[in-house]
Length: 473
Length: 138
Image (cartoon, rainbow over all chains, first blue to last red; front, side, top):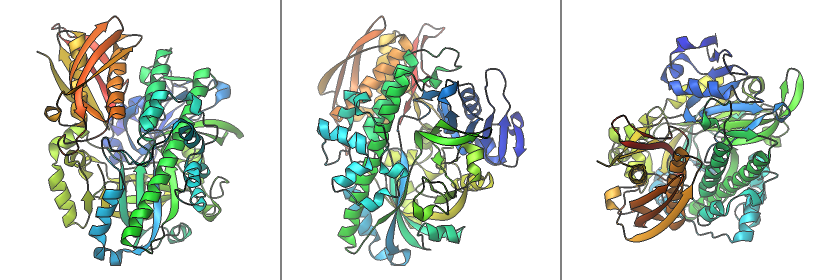
């Protein structure tokens, strides 16, 4: 994207002024280099989002934004139902409530070499990952509906994890007002063998070293220690979420797109029958994702216990980055209830927000930014400023710089794995092609993305994590 | 001559089929879809599945078709390497032939989550050839 095509408001804030059908400006947060690396489609898509009915303040793109479906990935938009606001299946994404969960371990990097290979192998055997992988859990119809209503709370009630875990998951581990009856039989059927599975593509399970602190006080608040080993899980609502996205995208497209500039933006009024059905189904998928990450947490604990019997893994936090949530935000001095879409963007509530667990209330929400298997990930903390700048939102990852097609031509999985091993990173996978498509070089510089998020006051950096083991398919 | 290809998308992957008829172009797009997930030549056409779908127009019929294939892949744990499509108006019936996923043999890459409206297009080129394409979320 040519920076000259944007109006620069500050070093990290770029505007597209309202024109044509745009109801509000479009705002991109990034540095010049990230802007130059962004596809022109980001500009087109964030501009299109700004035309949607009921949108408030601006359509936003985060520093890791890239070409998505209707909405850019890394897109944030909030809608007021009292002004005809809409909900968009594409604005949430196919992998509903995809997110990152990070677990503390009691172990230090210094002792890792003694058991690193064993741990990698046990994690690889324990965590179902990749195309067609299935878990051991089979849910009958009644239990499926209980899971879709209860999320991680359901999982804990069935013995996967502890009630303490729930305090460190957005919405206490369960999205309210989920409606399993709005989820198609096909979606439930697709999920029947996929509980407790990681999936493929950019999903992963990593053991990471806490390599650097940027804010020691915030790091202490999050319970982090220098050189501590943590575990991060990136995955979502699996086949159920994918099918709900498919079902409702089709429904919203079929309904017609009227004056909307692109049918990819297919949406419906929040208060319409279809809008309410989608909300109920989307919240059920959110619960599916939260239950899935909770079961995976249980499996990770079991795997650690096989190698390190004294292991006690506690939850740092769990964030979802493909969501639409009802939140209260201030518009023109009045507080309103808005439907905030975050498509590839992380909620970043600042200090004092009542939704945060007591332990983090003075620090702000942990914002978990996934990197690549060869670079690094970040933990940031939400800022008070992000409320006014992006409806309390920040980036979610590195964002792709190169397509899968290009990456598969450019790299060989076997070579990448060998190169990473030489750098001390063990990759466990069944798919060399999948690794090539996810090559670290196919992604943007996550360091630049995290820095831009901080400079734009969306969130502030707390800690940098580097991978030491990665399970991926 | 019927053929397929992938095309680039910022985060995911596009599938595109070319053929003399829309029916065959849909078949080719489905072969491109299998090739997103696995190594197509390794997939043996052993078991047969029938599917049917409909949509308001030909573009959305392609999306529905590819989503029907993705659904069968997911719930049956199968991959497909032969497709026979018969389009009538804005509905289709099809036969899929394939086999159960074998992670060792099929050189798996990535799951397909769903076909999207992005770059969705079914059209006849100036040379008379039909093209059927869209981006698939993976």
